[in-house]
Length: 216
Image 1 (cartoon, rainbow, N blue to C red):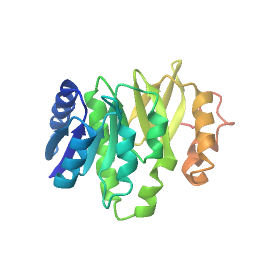
Image 2 (cartoon, rainbow, N blue to C red; image 1 turned 180 degrees about the horizontal axis):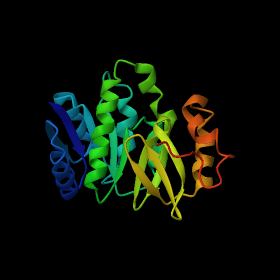
Image 3 (cartoon, rainbow, N blue to C red; image 1 turned 180 degrees about the vertical axis):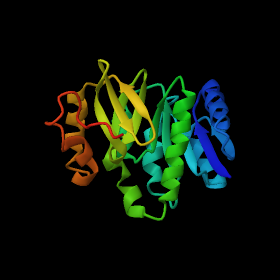
Image 4 (cartoon, helix red, strand yellow; image 1 turned 90 degrees about the vertical axis):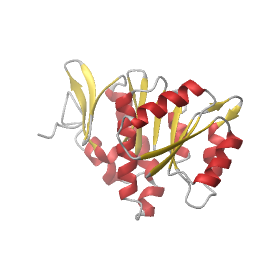
């Protein structure tokens, strides 16, 4: 049974996210908190595996929780769930697994659960988990922010006049330009392994309509 804690000061947002999580058909124990004090009380008592955390909690800041969790033994995995899209990159600094924006999308919630299960399978490889944020790329998809692992990207290019990024698990039509995507990937070279980004950058000069050829 996966223990989930939703921290949000808006009851409707908590209800919506809890409903979408139940629709994933995962075996979940879902609890809720409306402020930081209540969140820490429930974390101490219930030991959640996964924490869905709003940024703005009636004047309190969700990042304060995230930073304090770093000092905890076996802290929950963090997913930010917020109305603000401008904090996606900051979420990497506290090793967030994902970043969901309101109104929540059912498919994005499902993708988040898939990411969590992938991390869970790798839990015995602490070095890989601790450096996970160094391999993350934030993509603007519709009105949402999608966080992908650069090692999972197999194609980034234009198709039918739109920019697409494809991973092993999904395909995204993004608002970002190829120039912006490549620039952001190059920034990651300084904190991520070159091997993790080689699929994106190594063929950038060879393909006029995409950074990486599609894999068939």
